[in-house]
Length: 434
Image 1 (tube, rainbow, N blue to C red):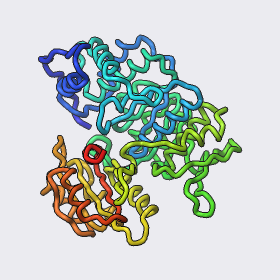
Image 2 (tube, rainbow, N blue to C red; image 1 turned 45 degrees about the vertical axis):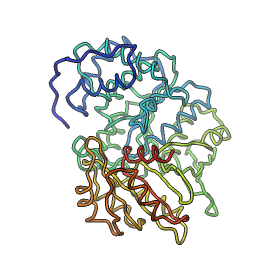
Image 3 (tube, rainbow, N blue to C red; image 1 turned 30 degrees about the vertical axis):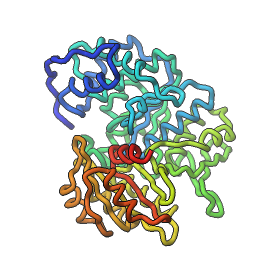
Image 4 (cartoon, one colour; image 1 turned 180 degrees about the horizontal axis):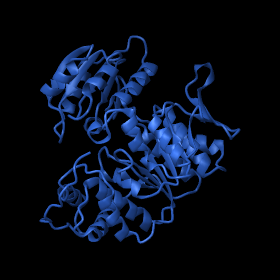
């Protein structure tokens, strides 16, 4: 964990309500010396100035290493289908900051965010906040002023010390626990699981979406009297018969069998969202659930951007996500199809682990530099990834667009071009193609 930061001198003036959203985002990046500074003390101070009492709403907090976004978007749509007004707060965004704050599935407008930023700025006084902390409090302001009934909040990093954890979850979901952000959370599943389990609350329901929770999560749940529902212990997930696409779900104390569609999203995430809705809105029928999930789309998650050749984008950026991506590619890949992979990464990611996990499927690698803070340049990426890349490496491009052009020049119509490794990688590809 990073050491506590000293408050910087407030040399910049807040942009004000007449400024643009970009002006505010630039300001937010400048007012705290660290991009990540885990801890709840500063956030709680400002939160109590904004809210004299906790908002009287229903709160679902979603944490985990991977699968959070899929769980949030599924639960968001299910709650709306139950007639609830739903606010969803997620991070990071792909192309617009507004993606992070949604009400009933619609991104809020620039002015709504600017007004909320100005409200948080007035409340914080001399207290410094990181970009994420400021945005989290602003999302709370937006939801409160809009009269939203259900707040679905995605943890940004960890859980115990993440800004969203200033609110007590009525229901908590931990999607998965694996190795990522080791400098903040630790280098093993037990220490990371302890941080993720910080979103649990005594005697309140919780779901663990994966099949193998660390002992630290189970111990935290037991100590707090939390009944932790998980696959094989609380509900069951099984593949549909006759190798048909999709799966089915049955909760142990619920006779209803619910169909889960094959959407290119982690089935465990969809199942967790359905288990949650059956706890929150037990009267919601399986027909309504099936309809709500039927056309679910999450940009950047196994997203098909083009056909002939098939171009798929995925924001998987750690070995756990890469293993899922590799299995997913294997399930859709046809005999004779080559996989051409475009990969760009941030410097603090396990490049060797990601490339190693994907190497069994990749026929040609196209590495790309990322010209963003913490982005790996070509020489560093090639040196680190080349150690474990089993397939041929077709050089390293200076941008995602250049790598995409090189891959498409080599691709046949029936090949698959995969773009992955970072939100920045996928965002650049979507900009180029869409």
